[in-house]
Structure formats: structure tokens, C-alpha cells
Image (tube, rainbow, N blue to C red; front, side, top):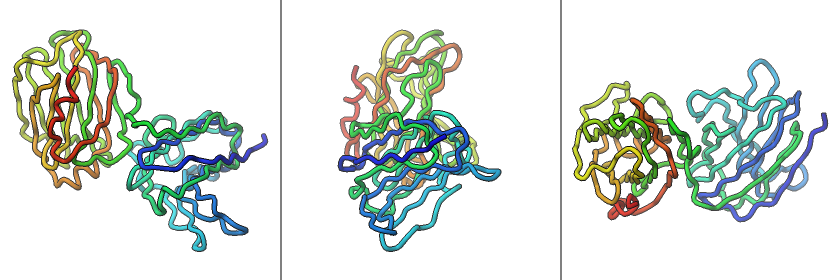
Length: 320
């Protein structure tokens, strides 16, 4: 099976952009590489390679290697098992299979997903604005598409009728607001929850927001590092914003000291941070919505908004 080499020019790279590549691996690969480069290589010097992703299939344990090459200085320390998201194999690419790799450019790091599943982060070692070229080489049968988008990036997948789970492709900061638009279906006395979880400990929840349709209550809580639940808070907002077969908008704001929640234009509850803010925001990388007791939550959108650290007026994002 023949292999190929793909080289393409990129528009000016900015924080917040997403580069998506789809293609197909040959049936008996040894390795293939993706590279985001400055395109300044000369002679035997490869130049600045900001992100080198090398999927390797040799040996008993295939792996995906990440590294940076600096012009005049050579290769830096590679990463193999470092900074992986939980429950990942070292090399999720399939021999002879189609693939999709998404590279999100955040301020501090690249966030990389493979086939829709969060895979790893890779801290920037060169200024991203100097990236100009993408190279794909070695044991690839086909490159179907390379996309570079500058639109506001949403978590993915957006729609799932029973359980929504999404990797947020950037670090949370004070001033961030997550806006969920959805409608509950099914049992009018069921319940559902929204959870912000820890990327390094998938079984730890930093913010738990549960809606009880049966008694029209809302409960908020969080977990300690060992997974035990703290003492939570129950509120009974009036008017109650959640009803079966009625659309709702839920805005969750992250200030400099607490989570604040609003729905349909009204603030309904807040919860102070239970961990140091930098540790909390640095480890919180995902959101999930779980439906229980016969309720199905149908999602229309999940949006990532940005405000100042006070999040003053964030309630407006929750208006229908």
C-alpha cells in the first residue's frame, strides 16, 4: 500500500481556533505523523515544529508521541504517557481505519481529541502565531479533509438524548459561563443533574447541580478529593424553571470565588468554591448531564461564553 505526504498552508493561527483532520490509515502502518510548523526549515534543519504528533504501531504497545522541534536546537523532550485524559489507550488509531483528529488551540496548550474522544493536552513551547504549515506524512492512505475554523468552539458531542458528556477544549477561568439550552422529556417527576468533573480524576465532581422535578427542588454539592460528597445545599426557587416538555436555558457562571446558576433569566442558586481556585479551574475539564428516573433531556445547544470575573449580568444568557 502506497503512502502519501500532505502539506498545506494555514491562515494566521489564533487562540480559540480548531484544526480538524480526517483521513484513513493504511492496513499495515509502521507510523504516521501530523505536524504544525512555522515552515522555516532549511537543509538538514527541520525548523520550528510547534506540535509533532507521531502515531507509532511497532512493538507490543503502540503509542502516540508528542514533541516540539526548535530551529537550531533540535528535538525537545517527547511526551508519551504524560497529560493524557483518563481511560485512553496510548494509541487509539486503528490499522486500516478512518480517523478524525481535532486540535484546539488554547492560550496555554493544544487540546487534542481523537475520533471524538478527549486524548491529551500539549503545552505550547513556541508562539502559536508563527504556525503557518500543516504536514501529514508516512503511512496514511488518504487525507479526506483539513479544516481550520475560528468560530466559537462548543463542547462536543452536542446532542445525545439520554446522557450528554463533553470535554471542554480549554481551561476554565473566572468569567466563563456555560449556557445549556434543552428540554426535559418523559417522567414529570424524574430528575437530572449537571456535573463539572475533574479531568485527572474522572470520579470526582467539582460542581453537582441536580434538578428534582418531583418536589420542585434543586440541590448543589461537590466531592472531596477522595470522592466523598460534602454537605450540599437544597433550594426551592420560585417560579420553578424546569418542567417536562418545556424548553429551558441554564447559565452556570464561574466567578472568582463561586459557581452561580441562573435559568430563564433568574438567578436560582450559588455555591462557593471548595478548593483553591487555581487547582479547581486547572483540573476541571469536562461537563456531563445525566438523566434519571425516566427523564430524557434533549439538548439544543451548549455554549461557552466569556465575561469579566464578577460575571455581573450573566443571568441574561439564561433568558429564553
